Length: 127
Image (cartoon, rainbow, N blue to C red; front, side, top):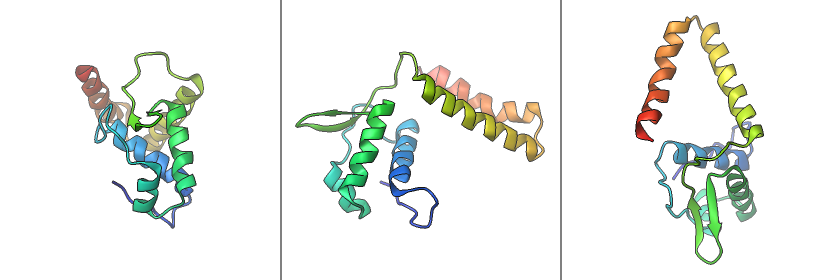
């Protein structure tokens, strides 16, 4: 599924959350697809099951996955409803920092638009 970087500054829990979010956003994991159980994923990644449980709880809180008692944990459908304001603020800050970095690296507005617009347009066409 993915590997963890034990030398990373990020905690194992954060890496699990980030990696699963990446797979969901990139549509490698499809909506309604069943995720490995906490026990299965903890064995695969050789980490404590509590770490996986904490990551799953965080992803559920953020709306990326949901759990059905007795059946397992599944990838959630993309939301059509209002986004969590705190989550929106965090994402906006990340985008702002990335754009600032592109400016710092010498790109101009048009070059940055050429990078960003295809992603925005692609998502608009796929809705």
